[in-house]
Every structure is written in structure tokens, then in C-alpha cells.
Image (cartoon, rainbow, N blue to C red; front, top):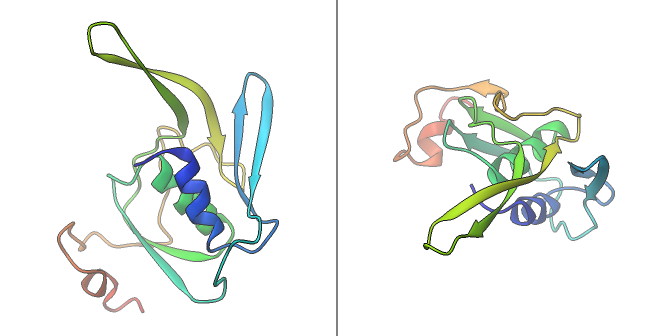
Length: 139
């Protein structure tokens, strides 16, 4: 999970300058988020572990690295939250989530309700397993 800017900022750490991270579509306007050169190491092989609980900013990161062929995604299909929402507090202490935009992956995919299919499907990785256990036989 997490907030959209966090997913964009983390993706920038692993992408070369000018590489598309996501596109935000709201009210007929599209805003592009591209890597700006803050990436410290864009050559080390990356493997991302995902499952049905991977959502929101985590999916932004996953899609950016997968679509740009920067990482191999391993696990099961992600949650599929391709919308950007703001939570508005109500007087009674509750809140309401208001959708303000959708985002598209660098390849133009709308993952909302669909999720991201990993490059390598692995159903044997449990949430309590180490990365070494989950990636055994893959790397």
C-alpha cells in the first residue's frame, strides 16, 4: 500500500533519467511522472516479491519497474488498485475516500480491478518467508 508520491519516489531510485514512472489521468488531463536522475544504481538486477496484498503505491513501484524491464516480478497477481484517492474526514470522526484520479502504467495499462501479473508466478512464497526462500531456484 502507501501513498502515490512514495511509490513514484521509490521507483525513481531504480530508473534512469527520463524513464516514465506513471501517468495520472484526472478530469481529462494527463500528468506524467518521469524519473529525474536521482537513481543511485540502475544496473543491479532487481527482483520484486508481490502477492494479492500488494496494492496502491506498491503497485506503482511494481508496474514502473516491470514495464521498464528494470525488475523481474515474482509471486502472485497483485491487488489491482489503480486509483488515487484522498481521504476526507467527516465531523463524526469517520472518513470517506474520494477518487481523484486513475493512474496508467508506463506501458499504458490500467491495472484497477485487474492487478499486475508477475513475470514469474510463485505460489510457494508465504508472507513470513525470507526473500532467499521465496527466490530459491529463481536466482
